[in-house]
Length: 269
Figure (cartoon, rainbow, N blue to C red):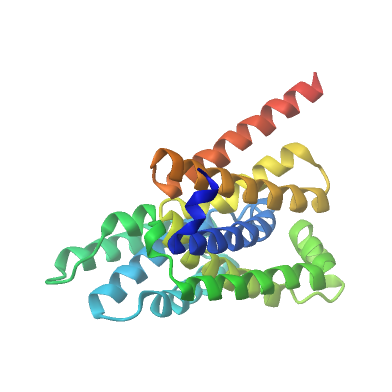
C-alpha cells in the first residue's frame, strides 16, 4: 500500500522535494543549533508566510516573490545581530511577530482573492510543483557541495568564530551563505510543512543526532539520516492514515528524538 502512493505525480514531487529539504535542513541545522541560532528558522518561516500572502494578494508568483524577500530578511537579522544594539533573539522575535501580522493583515483586507490560509500555515502536499522539485534539487546540490568543499571552515566557524577569523576564514561570507541557504530551505519547505512547522525540520534532527554522537562529523551524518528517516516515515504515515503531511513529519521527528534520548540514557546506565 505504501509503495502505491508513488503512482501519483504529486506524491512523487513531494518525495523529491521532501528528501532534498530534509537533507539541506539537517546540514544547515547542525551549524545553526550548535551556534545557538536555531530560532532564525522560525523567524524566517513567518517572513515566508507574509511574503506568500502578499504575493498572492498582489498577483505575483509566490515562490519568486518569497525567496528574495526572505533572503533580505535573513541578512537584515544578521546585520542587527552583529550591530550588538539588538540581541539576535530579540531581532528574530520582532521579525516573527511583524511578519505574521503583515501576512494576516494582507489576507484579511484582500478582496476577491482565494487564499488557503491552512496551506500557508500547515503546508499542503498538493501545492508542491515541478518548479519546487527543480529548485530543491539545485539547493541540495549547492548545500552538499558546500559541505564537501568547506567542511573544515564550517567546523571552525561553528565552534570558534574568533579562531576562524584569525586563520583567515571569511566568516561574514559564510554567515551570508548560510543565511541565504536557510531562507531558501524555509521557503521551499513551507510548501510542504507550512510556516508553523518548517523550523522543526532544522532543529529536531540535530538534537537527535547529538544524542548519538559527540563529534561534529558524527552529528552531521546522524542528523541527515534522522531527517531523511523522519520525512519518509511521516510521508508514509500521512498517506496511510490520511493525516496532514507536515504535522506527521514533525511528530515523526519528535518520536525519533525521544527514542534517541531514551537510548542515550540506557547507554549511560
